Length: 389
Image (tube, rainbow, N blue to C red; front, top):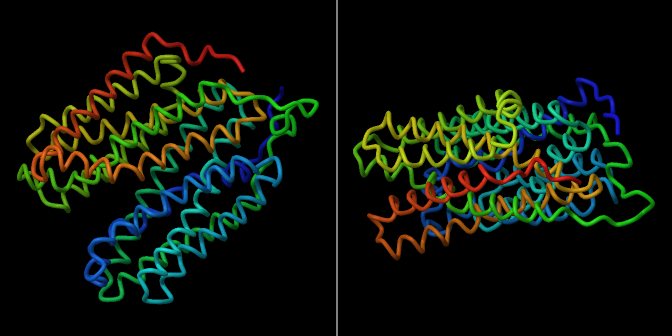
């Protein structure tokens, strides 16, 4: 099948989907601000950040079942962008914690509807090395968006006593996504509907990819959340230093996204092993490092590794399932990734009970890098990119 011609504006609209995919993280720098404003809700403040991930899971499943089938990609993106925009900005107009959580759920639903569109479009519109390049660029835009949106959130949250309210205005950037969605291309019809109306099953490897990204996020997400605590415990700096190190993690992800196409071309089937091994090495450095430079270097290696294996997973997805099931496959993978982030909270609590509040972080990191190294070794011998549709 020949690739459909896609204009520069069409491609820019796809990249915009990646850029705004981290919209729910705008409020991350404002957690302390929310604590000050709603001190009686201290035990539930974290739900402002984590509740949207649960609804992202729901949204991605809905998107996978309807996009390109019951509704056009463009129409879904416009609708989802508007839902996310309303849910994101609405809390700026009232002072009610419970209603804020409802709005965060609406934001998560809209973000979930948007989440699988970028990968599904690239896999449906491009093939081979060009597809790999663009999947890497998508990761680049996702990380760049994460950096910019969190900086914006931090600036808005720090504007004074109304910072808790102004931070929600950061979601106004979703207007860009709504406008650009009008220029989204549609994949060729045969990439959306099975030939002769025959229903094709989704490739079995998709479930393996979903499981791997679920476990990875389950193990890695709480490590990132506890990084500022680890910095303080080791006298390596306070929360501000930890935040800077985590920003460099994202910067490394941007670099990986930019270079992924070349890495994929050279490493081919070993690219997943390389990415997972880098994540394991990075977490190992954080585990053994006692100083800020070593721990920061470890986080940067993890960021580079994640942004290497994740687009490789998406490329694998494109080869492992029939074109008519790409939308659902992309949705399933992203749903499990966000589900891993959501269940990371009870996992975090479990380790805290087992090892104690002051000693659970290092065992958590150890579990993380062991998993990464094991997966890296397995994929040295596995050949995912030889799987046929």
